[in-house]
Image (cartoon, rainbow, N blue to C red; front, side, top):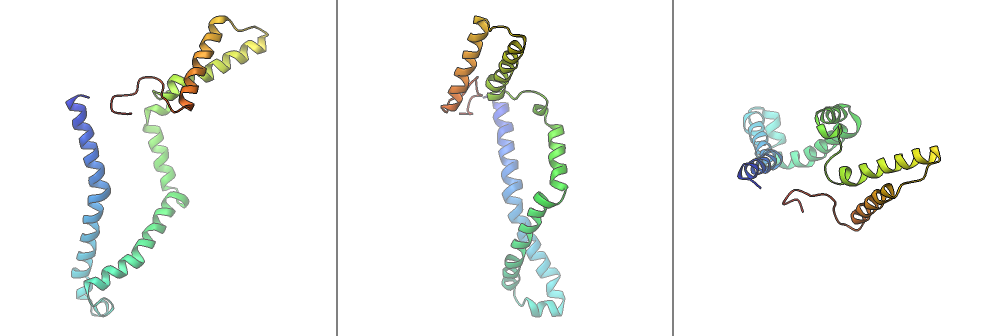
Length: 160
């Protein structure tokens, strides 16, 4: 793997860790502290409800976590936003318009093509040639290798 590729991979891992974990924790602390010290401390009836920051954090954990889980569930299962995101992602992914390298390109694509050719020959009443039988056996070996836990094609270095 080239240094440039390693750098991009490192940046991707950094971005994923930063966005997924670090900013969530920092954002949570920021929201809790700013809402408590800038808003709740200024409103007398709220300070009676949450006399300390610990009470406020406990309340937010007990009420907030289930609420956020429900909102996430709604986002994925009930509201059309996730479906729209999936549509956009599918439109933007080039591999939705061609065979993905690896298993699909090296085994399943040729297997489907062989089945199609066999069916066309059967419909015409023709016999398979020795070359076609050899190709089918080659595809069969690849599929068996996949079933046995192996791989076909040449995976990128570091993938396995």
